[in-house]
Image 1: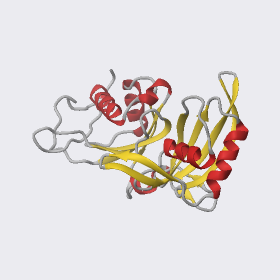
Image 2: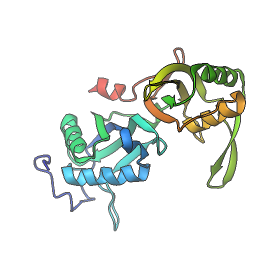
Image 3: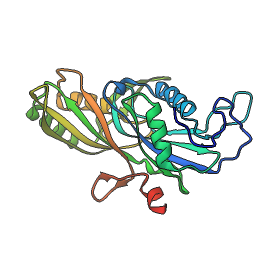
Image 4: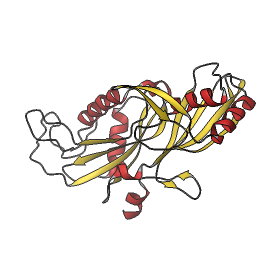
Length: 254
């Protein structure tokens, strides 16, 4: 495995080295790797860091941990083209070289798409909303459109989700900025796809929550397991209802 020239032994982290550069990354979960949990990805990413030998900073204490901050990870089972994290480096490195090294050290399907030097401002503050596509095998376009129309006409669509503290009622309609149905083909058979923009709220409203709301309010019946893909997450343009690139400011400042 190729490493960055002059990188210290990755098996011997030195918490005394200061952080001199922060890098922000967009990564994707594709194909069968959409079933990777956030914890599984974190383990795979730390292994990739060790294999690539990039000079990442570590926390102090008896068991130093690499300086990694994750932001708003997608649910297990959902594919994503727009996951984000930030790492602290003990020396300045070329973002493209770091991307190449980490991407080659990760399994296919967990892919580092973009790396930029972090500029002032918290990355999490820029992740205001997400754009999702949800493939509904076996569901016709007309049925999906009818359910969407009924759902959007409501101000409050309550659903129940099991939380650590027990069941909780959520309004899955309020954070949905946009929701439309279109036709597509799955395994040679016509089906519906839901395209939606959802605000990030606390607790979060996930694709399966919206599907539950469509079932309860609009009678949507799922024939097979739906497949959700996050296409983007970032700042929300309130005029157009579109989601922008959260790394644009960092890239422009460079």
